[in-house]
Picture 1 (tube, helix red, strand yellow):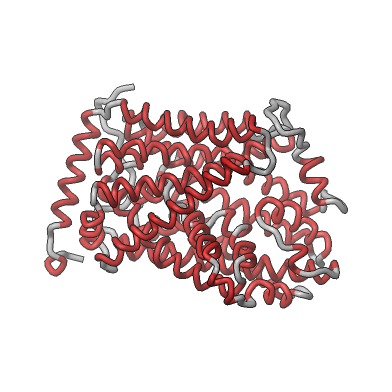
Picture 2 (cartoon, helix red, strand yellow; picture 1 turned 30 degrees about the vertical axis):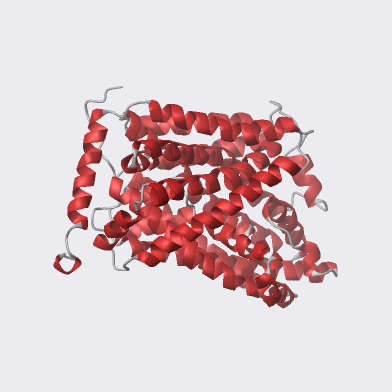
Length: 519
């Protein structure tokens, strides 16, 4: 491929386009099926206190951190880290690799939700939702690695990848922003309808009482605070390149901190809305079965594909409720997956001077092929579950810890980022923001070390070493090696020249006194 001509860098035409895209990335499956249960397990209503503290002291400050990196560099994650220092580039490639891994398995869950949209209409699971999901639908085999495909899982997964790559081929503004501006409002409308329906179910109050009754004694437990920081961290799509990439598409004078506040609070508002809807429905389910809410409350895949189908079979109008619920999962999942896949697409564009079309076909196509080979098999769930655990708890957290250590502590770039954010934004940052970033680094380092020790000493879900060694530790090791190799490859001279120009523009902007600036 030629590197003589520069592929034109795309931009979001407005701040609202960026905000919709960023919210679309942040609002994903975890908001719907993870936050309600984490809240319930960690003090109920009292958990909102550490949750909001984590949002204000870690989530939003980290959003600002990554926005500054992306906007100042006008580049992908590897290029943004390369701008801070040559030695930091592997962190950018590692976080990009984590996005690749997440995209590979995330698409499969969206495919399942798409299937269940239509299963709901006829309650295809009958009287045994658990047996149907793991047996008839996934056809799960023994733990291991198999290439025995399940057509009912393969076909929806193909459709998901066709949709995602089609949208990405349309570009940043027409594809990513256009899709988000349509489907985020649609997702909110559908989910509001689901929540309102849940609130009028018999027993809904019992579910809400279980969720929001505060246990203030839980606030003295450090694990509750760690859970709050973990929930905020995972739900905002930070530390694996998305927000760096999206911020790089913004125009030079964009109110970055204002946008960060909108994205952070919108994401949390949706999570709380999800908690209300999910636990109102679980309250009905518990009442119908004559058990306690604790007996039916769960999270993740079990809640979505076992708990809710059981609920759908018991409630009046269940098929329509189920269709809307799984449609919400599909829309939330697609907006997140699009942002995830865009991370490596832009990284390859920057490194090898590829066009958007070429990079999308090459990167997205490779991810789709790997996803189609691993996920729709009788052992796909074991690979998915392991990849998810290591990518989130080791990959994403590790990437953030390395970023804070390298960029904030060793290279001392926070004052520079602060000046950049203040030069273009309404909400000004200072020493408080820098201190919060450092505190967040300590909290995340504790989370990372604790999780590594747990996996090393206890393993994961009683899976054999072949599974955890291949899709867990092996995957992390492969990402680390790939990050180093890609960092050794020289950047094209044109990219370096553009990077120098971006630095010069940023320095000029940062040195303009606020009172002398235009709008």
